Image (cartoon, rainbow, N blue to C red; front, side, top):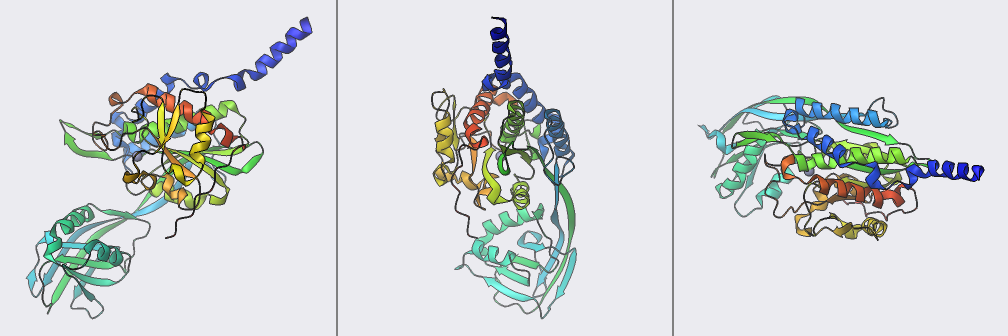
Length: 432
Ligand SMILES: [Zn+2]
């Protein structure tokens, strides 16, 4: 009797962690604590390159440390550092046929700190007439590194002014090439007899970083499963009713919270056969630069799947206890997750907004492009969400139960991929 009881007790103890249901390993209070911290006003909207995002980064690093995640191989801490260039045009003076053009009719794109032209023979003059496709011509020109004066027909005024306004705020890119010198001018120029250009701009090399940690696999160490969300947001934007902080509670403090909770969950389970990577991406909002860099640092062939999580704070179109998966038809990732949730109250659906092109609008795209079954899980009703990218994307507008339920569903549904039992089909690489 005694021995039997002892054995039962022993088995019971051993099994407690494994037998625990996700609802016992993750608490709504903890979810609320994390998202509240990340979306608080003192994070200043977590814009890339600001003190606000640094504060968010330190918080996430501290969570990773408490969970006891390891830095990625080759790293000494959780920061995956890289840098980008920010180019902000300062002054562009252009005269054509001895007449100085109004500033709003001029747009310069250059990686140089300054340049001056005066009827240079090496400057090419290109005309974009009303019959051409301005945006296509524009794209071709900005991918070249030539000295070009571009005469844009007044027919394109509205688009020209939108592009110019955006350009004036500065642009972020991987390289700042001083040989790229493009000056667009709006106007009706039948003949250019003389011109002069004086340009100065600010070129800055700025540091940024993802925050990544891992739990090495027990047996399949060289097979990676990635869980991700982006920790950056828009920062300070145009005030509405005295509030100018875009808190980004749903976008994407909710996804970042999920990443931290998933790390906590799998660390407690301690039975992952594959290596798990947990990453909070920077600079999603300004061009998915964080995930693009991450994709260059990981071997895509060894990356089995990516669970990217974006905006899970509000009930989905399909009702409570549901979420959708972008790019559902591109692999069998979604059907594996659905199968793993059979018999539970939660259900995953294919993305109901294919016209929104969501598959290419989040960080999963950076890995999908190189063939990884990389999908985004979301509950946002993006077609009618009035809070999206506004100062009103605050925790008070979210349902923490929805976030908690979605995280639990991701936990349960990812287990067969984490254990090595299921391997989703690859996505065809994007031809560029
Ligand atoms: Zn987002």
